[in-house]
Length: 338
Image (cartoon, rainbow, N blue to C red; front, side, top):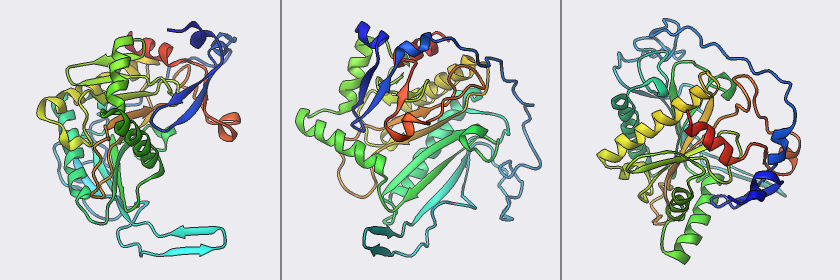
């Protein structure tokens, strides 16, 4: 790798959002006097009678959960989007707003109250992937839904309101800003080159090898060149697919394996149940053709130096642009070695 990227301040370009991130590798040499203690894992229990997500328990709405054995899906009792939101628009001079309808769902990954993704076996993780596929299909075929966002917030510091391992789906009428940016960049590249942007990108990454965390026959996990968060990662299918419903059986299993591998490495990094926000970006479901889209899953973890030392988007990052000290190459090598 170019030595300038290892030693000197520089900007890196995000090919998907067409935005820049400032990288300051020389700052990793400064003395650190912060805390580096381990974080003890809490008591591991398989069932909590007070948990709103455990099987057969009642939620705050009064609805009783099924006695589920694998995954469990229900409409969020406090969804940020509502299906019956009226269609309206508001404009007053420079002020503009419009109604936004949608559906928010919760997906419990397992009936076990303490079983997180890194601790689940591959067949159980395949069930999670299959649930994501099923919900994407159901929601994506709704004429009022034009985008389906699958995500997980893990850990209290990521705003997770319930410790029972679960993810969410927000499906909405409009296409979100981040997806519009990624659609534009991928479409521009596809029109010019006739191939997927991410397909060419992962070929280059696999050839260079410095940012690869792990791979199998059909998936690769890496720290993107333009990563913002200290141990940010992406899981990308090697074959171009617009959405997760194009996965065949082998690919579902390989995807599950990469999910487990990455999250296990996260937990080992600072000997803690590693917090993160993860999400799958895939093509909109508005009925249009998206030949350029290559779906991928991103992980944004906040931990920087230990189980308790976190990165915050403050100061310069709030007012100018994202910045990081630890290089993507250093982060990848740390995770790969675990």
